[in-house]
Length: 282
Length: 253
Image (cartoon, rainbow over all chains, first blue to last red; front, side, top):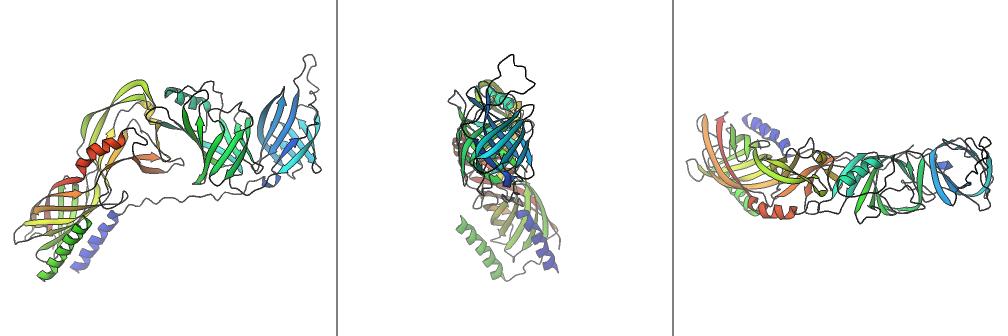
């Protein structure tokens, strides 16, 4: 009896020898994006007509010529429209809905109706504007990469090098002014910093990367995702703060997408990295 | 070291079985204090020449020494920013189980003790207090884990794993002592003097992962300039942890 008691006592001490910090496993089992079957890219053909000025606009001042040259619908219900004005292209982004893939209601922009096959007849009715009829080449999104969808930016980690010890900081979301303050405090001048924040990053099945900002604008670039490696280049760097084109790595952890981009501050030799922690959009 | 430890333990068993005496026929409860922390032990005889001791000790948070600390820039990434003095509080950090064998060469209380301490590799914790506010937000990224202060405090642990791993350290112990761990009467007083082999210490701190995971990460010169030199210069004096302790044992049966 004494020996049993003794053995039990010693056995009771055994759990003290072991720690129990079980690590969660990685996961990349994401639900399929909601609009995957309607995703694709429209590139307008050259013989397009400029948008007609809205009927309500006075004709006293000449309106800037504004031409739609590109529309993309992403797998997660985000649209991007490329509008060329006086030779410069700017991008507008927002959510869309569609029930059959022929009419897309684009929040904050208008409606886009598609008919026929390549070239596709595109009827665009901008909010408060006249109807435009365009012809475009339609490229349907393809590929089965888990990255091909929209990702909401939950958190941003910025690391800057330059002195003996690199400094890193986490930010909820990705507010440019907050990040700029961190850079300035730590001895780096980021230059002119736009207001607002980066809200989402999308990789699409037609090879695009889209940064959508809180003010409804976007940056669009070309992108290839191969395993953990991402290569991208921007079509325009108008709104790209800190991050210039280049290489990135992508990973999936705890139901999140981790996108790490090596970055360089504009007009500076300071290098660093920006890591986005992102949740999948519907 | 592993071979030596194995040999000692084998000798302890050999002695106990050769003696042909009673094994596990008594049990004693001991409490102790020393440079290995405060502990609670159970002891039982393995014959007349050997006792086995198993227990748990903790020194975490005990014996705090405050030093002058270090000078840090107000903003961690900017050495040109204003300096702030940050005091450093040093204290024990161990928290481990132990399995020890007392080997009595004679009939008296003099003995040799061999065995091992097992558990946390941390043995000293240094806490920087009153860090500038920016350190609560800005830190260093160690393999995806951000090490930064919390409420102005940043804890850095000195860890050594002995012949185990960082997650489960095994620190062989050899020493001498006086006193019977299983008292012949009701109570016995013991004193131990020895060393734990713990290997070269490394510096660790708690970091927060990108997705919120929290994990201990090792600090090296890759993240903190000069860190490797500091651990090299001072760590070599801590390869063996001196262990001096006293115990009182109560015979349960």
